[in-house]
Image (cartoon, rainbow over all chains, first blue to last red; front, side, top):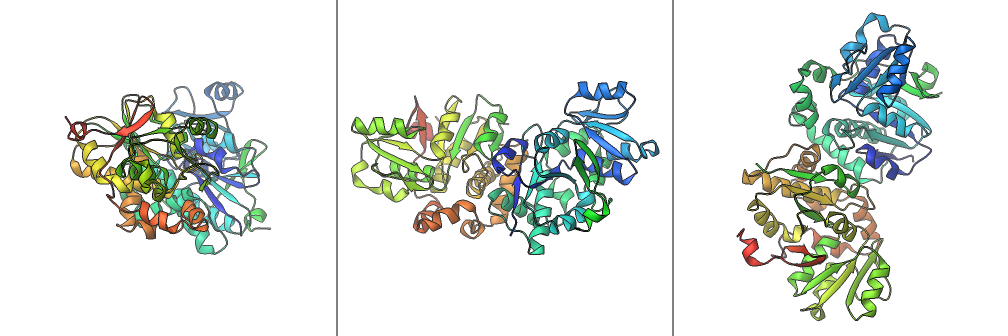
Length: 244
Length: 244
């Protein structure tokens, strides 16, 4: 039976020690939620880049670029990290470029594994249903905050663990998955209440981003599963989604 | 108000970024439980060493030496990592030497901070009562298992967070402390049940160490607070314990 492991922060990913796994990159507030939103709203592909210099080069070449650091949109770029930015009609059929504080770093460290997909509450059902059909080991990679553990990504990892366990097709041997699962169970369907004291929620609240938080905690606003192919995020095709 | 931070594994300790904190080293199954037992049973001091070579050198000099790797006592040494090993009358007034898979590594990485003390369920009340009086920032350092997060150390960290919060004298700004606290609350006073699936519990159960696990999850078998002084663990003196 395939296993599900969880890296509660980027620092812990190398210890998962799996080079033939599907890695789910998780940065619920807000990078991976925003990425799902972009594909739901017609973006053709997204190029994740780890640093601002690279993002600038793409901008010079005429790409639409999203850039965020420390919760704020960087001046001069087209978008920040808010899902609402990616509801703009001008993204339709475009190749976007994105760099964020944590999420794009997570994609970078996972890129050499078997497969990298993007997870958020906003695509949890599409993602989990697809994962259940894959019969591959899974690593849930929480981006966290600058290497540190955060509550919202751990909570989401636990929500996916719950769905994988419920399918009867996955097991875990790692305490990080069990801990995330326990956190999810103790949140009892009230993620907003559960996260009321989380450090990043407080950080974003100060930046007047409460609407973003509310959006990012909603389930199934998207049926898209962004997947990394040759360094570029594209939408997973229906055939693959059906487990073919 | 001083803060309590939590490193859920050794890898995450450097990110706590505090060099003026009391660090509580936690390796519930079983190093820190065993250390408390040794002091409760009259050991004079314990020298933690990170590797087996150092342990061997001390043994040649005539010291009593405990050495464990991967849950098992290393052949040729006096003790392993079981608290029961440290109930032996011959340890009374002796200087012991100890090397373990995770616990002594945690002491090593924390040693340059303001103060390092040893925590386990077996000394939780003595430890927490003393911490509450110190008015210093605290880092709860979970040794984990080879750098990975484990449930039992996270649970213990959460139990200490609960006592610090209850005192009204500590606050936290970090999600790792909140996550550990939530895990503790969800265990609802049944740590054995909570840990039934933990990876290290299963590892130790295979080694016939169920009695050890039961012992390590008991509260307040000891009133000792081992503290690191000049690289050697000694018992914290009563004056300091009273917060003088």
